[in-house]
Amino acid sequence: MPMRPLVLAALLPFSVAACASAPDFPAGDAANAPFPQIVPVSEIQAQVATMPGEDGIDALAARAADLRARADKLRGTPVVDDETEGQMQDALTSS
Image 1 (cartoon, helix red, strand yellow):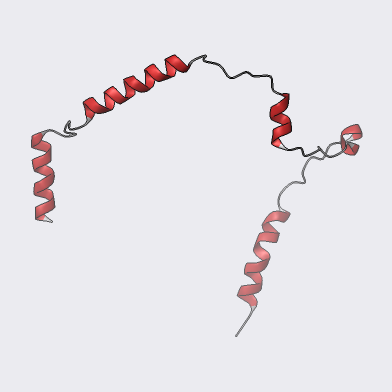
Image 2 (cartoon, helix red, strand yellow):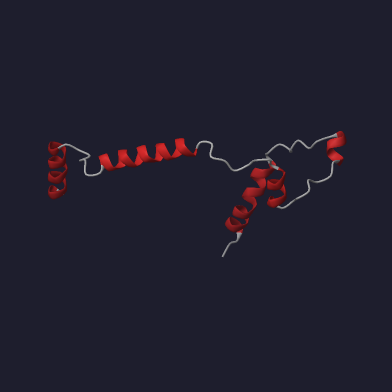
């Protein structure tokens, strides 16, 4: 069994990658910069000075109530008119 197609398929990604341009690496001081330090998220959150407050809570609750009322109003409302629904039912029974 010839292995040529398998070898060609394995080499295809490398030949396509060889056509790409080389990445632009930083020069000067940036080339010798230290890697960023990885810190826990809790340390980052501790640096943010935010106090939990009630800002926007009332507006958000009012918007949620409006959306619930709109959803209740839309429940039970037909999506299509009776004529279109009849045509859809006829198409289903004829197929």
